[in-house]
Amino acid sequence: MEQQTHLQKGLKKRHMTMIAIAGVIGAGLFMGSGSVINLAGPGAILSYVFAGIIVVLVMRMLGEMAAVNPTSGSFAHYAHEAIGPWAGFMIGWLYWFFWVVAIALEATAAAAIIQYWYDGIPLWLLSLILTVALTLTNVLSVKAFGEFEYWFSLIKVVSIIAFLALGAFIIFGIAPNFNAIGTANLIGEGGFLPNGFGAVLMGVVIVIFSFMGTEIVAIAAGESDEPLAAVTKATNSITWRILIFYVGSIAVVVTLLPWHSSDILTSPYVAVLDYIGIPAAAQIMNFVVLTAVLSCLNSALYATSRMVFSLAEKGEAPKSFLKLNKKGSPVNAILAATFFSYIAVIMNYVSPDKVFMFLLSSCSAITLILYLIIAFSQLRMRRKIEKENPALLKVKMWFFPYLTYFTILATTALLISMFFIESMRSQILFTCVVVAIVMILYVVTQRKKVINPIEEASSSFQKDNLILNNETE
Image (cartoon, rainbow, N blue to C red):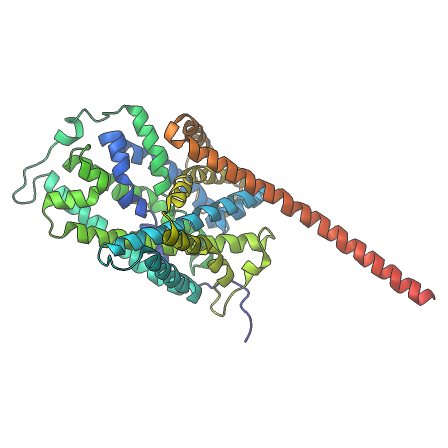
């Protein structure tokens, strides 16, 4: 049978639509929002608004480039073309590193949630089972990935909408047995900014990490039946998705409950459902959070495999990652993405996973570097397209180039601020080390590219001389 040489176009319109809608709803919304609220108080709403503005602008830029050239690997490819091979290499491998670490942690987090119901099963075994199951899903075909992600995403969307509806009914006194809450919890517990505006900005750095995943729709466009329609719809709807799912749900939490409540820090969504009086609130939210975590794990396996596949196409990753199975899935690239997961399984068996928690917290700076590279790529690519073929610009960045410059400045400011926030200094320094290692690898691989052709030419020359001498004799 003929060997597949191209990624399969197996993602249907409904897959892309749901990935676009729910891609923004990550596990960070359910699991990390409590710490942001505890840090910034009701001002956490502003943290999510400011972070959301940056993400909306970055997605618009990415959408502009993806509409012109929908390709697997997306932003690494655009960085390669617009800035140079070093930029594509760096951001591709940083993105791969980010998600392979996240895969390991998402598998561990999902296993911990399942232990809530089945505490007799070891954490390492559950983590192993989940990793293997979702690896097989991705290896099977891109359509299988799309189906799983469709249903995971549907559960997330329905859950958040139900949460918002319940919260709104109570806040405005529509629900029976509840009086209108008013603004008592928003401004009556130390004010709207109880810890000052600086805490809001610190919250932005934390929040920006939870938005990772929005960019997957651009990566998936390369395997979509209708890439232009999918990218256009995703970028046009990103604003309302962030406003509703993130800003809306955080606003419900801090309006219904005092921001300094210990229950919010533990689990804000469970705390709200308990307050409303929903039976088995913890059980319901554990199921929703498990779905979100599995969705992240599923998407991470997809994104990392496609990114390293794209790098391999440009000779920036081993050629073995280009191997496709009969269904057109990059099997070696998918298996490589689970490497850290199996290391995590071993660590969960023999020791606590503190090392991986540190690695995950260190990834927030990678998010900012990714956004910075996307902005610079769009800046250069837009000017090139406007000169060569403006008709290709089906999706345009708003108020170009001013909002692009704003994004670059805002992202740079957040990166620099991490050096001055004591709790985040180790994260940015660790990321700097990772960036340095990646760039050293780039220099080494580039040297090999230069040396190999010279060696091949020299070998060919020697061979020709040998043949000529033999003929002469």
